Structures are given as C-alpha cells and as structure tokens.
Length: 243
Ligand code: NDP
Image (cartoon, rainbow, N blue to C red; front, side, top):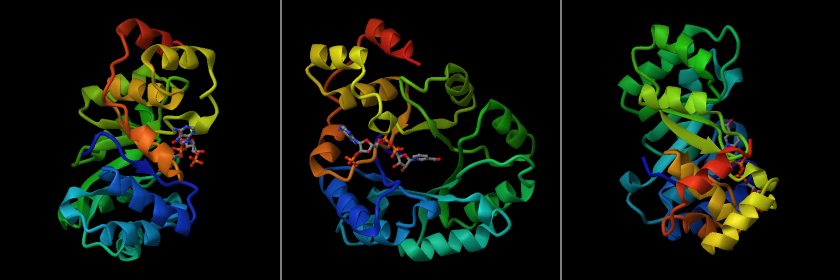
C-alpha cells in the first residue's frame, strides 16, 4: 500500500476527475473514494484513462451503513461505477451499534473471490475492533481514522500497530481548520516547509498512511513534497501535545 494518496471527499464529479488525473500525473498512486462521496465514476474514469498500469494504482472505496444488508450488491455497484476489474481496498465506512456480523463475513467472501485485494474498516475505536476480532477470520488490513496532531489518540494507534492493522489518517490537515496554528506555523518556518507539509509529515512519522484532499494542483503537489525532511523527536512531541 502506498504511504500517501489523494482523498476525494466533497469533490464533485468534475473536480474528482481533474484532481485524480493531476495527482496521478504528479506521482500519487493511492486514491481514496467512497460510495457516499458520489464520485466513484469520475475517479474510475481518471484512473482508467491515466495510462498508468492498473496494478500500480491503489484504489480504495467504502461500504456505507445503508448498504449493510447488501454488501455484495453495494460492492458490485462500486466496481461497476469505478469501471475496474478489482478494488485494492474495501472498507466498512462506519461501524454502527449492533452491526450484524454478516457485514464483515460478506466482506470476507468478497475478499475470497479475489475481487478485492484487501478489506478493512474505518472509524473503528479499540472497542469496535476488539468486538470484530472475536468473529473475524480475516483481520482488517487497515483502519482509516481521523488522525492529525489535533486529533491524536495514542491508544488506537498503538492498538492497531499491535494487531498489524495499518492506520490510514483521514482529515490529516484538519480540513484546513488548524493550518494557522502558531506551533505548526513556527515549525513550518523552522523546517522551511508549509504548515500543511508539517502536519502531513507528523502523520507519516507516526507510521500512518496519509490521504490529504485537495482540488488545487499546486496543493496536490505541495502535499506530496513531504519526504525530504524529518521532524525532530522534540518537535514531534510538541505537535503531539496539540490535541
Ligand atoms: P483534509 O484534512 O485532507 O483537508 C482538506 C481541506 O484542506 C480542503 O478544504 C483543501 O482545500 C484544504 N487543503 C488541502 N491541501 C492544502 C494545503 N496544502 N494548504 C492549505 N489547504 C489545503 O480533509 P478531508 O476530510 O478531506 O480528509 C482527507 C480524505 O480522507 C477525504 O477526502 C476522504 O477521502 C477521507 N475521509 C474519510 C472519512 C471516513 O469516514 N473514512 C471521513 C473524512 C475524510 P482545497 O481542496 O480547496 O485545496
């Protein structure tokens, strides 16, 4: 699984098609969408028309709770909208209390059919995962959760690491709301990077995958330029303390 990718929440069809195309041209190889986002068609189109071999692109989509009684049909719908032969990662988008065991069991069946390369979860806390592991035959490969210096819960990160579940950070830029924070700004200045790059680098140094969303090509480029610097352990600690 690539360590960084493009999020597409709130992107219209037109925005998603252009942004995914731009991101792929700039070297992104992971694209995150969901049935809920309503843009699987345009995401799939951009992926298919990119000219990049399919196996080099990692596509994630998600099962929304309203489809919990028909996961196979929902999965087939996503596959058809994306226009792909297989999906790389299929996630249960959100757990609900009393979620039937059959949801995960259906995902395991889809996984066995090889139409998806990995199955995982999203928005699961430690208790939700413990419940799932009681009956799961396939351990979720990924838990996609809200994760940033302003939404930092060590417990879930350590628990997932312990179970070998990859943590994928969504809203790693806090949807833009904390990019003006004084600590982040000071560190951006210190490392000669932008606040967004400092926030993303912090996630990477905690071992998570990142999927920042942007519909602007200059920001898509900026968000990928996070592999040429390292935040010191002292500065990591200062960022850890922001939440
Ligand atoms: P992000 O933290 O990625 O922030 C996106 C916002 O930040 C947009 O408004 C964007 O604006 C702005 N932005 C992006 N780059 C920069 C930059 N370099 N400088 C300044 N502003 C910037 O939020 P998301 O909530 O979108 O999370 C990322 C992805 O995670 C989603 O798109 C989705 O794929 C996934 N997600 C999953 C959820 C789940 O339940 N599993 C829930 C929420 C998100 P602009 O586009 O105008 O550049």
